[in-house]
Image (cartoon, rainbow, N blue to C red; front, side, top):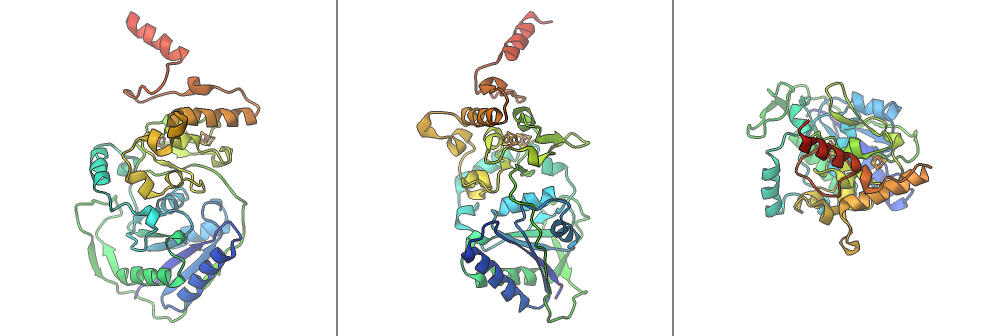
Length: 344
Ligand code: SF4
Ligand code: SF4
């Protein structure tokens, strides 16, 4: 059977129950043959040039990552660290994170499928990444069993995709693996270094349409673009700790803050997919009567003032997308409208 790499991402907290669950899973995996275990600090906190991240980047083939992050958040944290792959189907689901049980959400998603997503322009390597959420169960054996199932599933090799983006309508071609390594040992490598707690946005490129609203909204220089003008989180550590403001203004719910206490903002697929994408309902506080964008503007102002800068309020909200008239126009908008009326 082909070997399988499994990464255990530790909780940033010292909660003994969490630590025990992590270690019990490591112990359970060590008893399995053909599994290589890597233990790293909290995936979200470690920096791209840390030894733990560099070790993960070197792991070839299909990969299982077990973390305290929602599956979607973990996948896109890996992606921003150059660990790319197709999403592997996980059967051990966090009940808060099940996106398959809502018929209405399927209809909503098919409407959204008409949009061009950044992922559609990407070439992905011919590998699968399975992200398991440690919140899915308190029993270590549930995780060991699921990893064994994935290991069996991966005892066949995926071929013939040419390294390109997946074509969902076509089934994957599979042949039996021939390079299995016979071994009863399951080595564990550990990386203990920590960079401290971090706070930054993570983009889900399967949702992102590259509309650039986030780069317009953020006044702290967090976002940038790559050489083909695709949005990216360029200066993550410029982000203001605890503030999720830009996640509220992204029209596609593509921005996650994986450590936020609200599941929809932290990357729960359920919260994002089971509701029609109405950000006022999803992220706003209906009882306050404020829209998601108004709340975002208030949160951003708080951070501007804390940073010794002037608040900008709703006036600072720019809109690149047409047809999304969600707030009062600012002076510049009014001037542009006047110029348009003059037809100059
Ligand atoms: S606002 Fe959302 S959809 Fe638009 S570029 Fe930013 S992340 Fe992508
Ligand atoms: S939360 Fe605030 S500072 Fe951080 S990226 Fe979003 S808008 Fe910028």
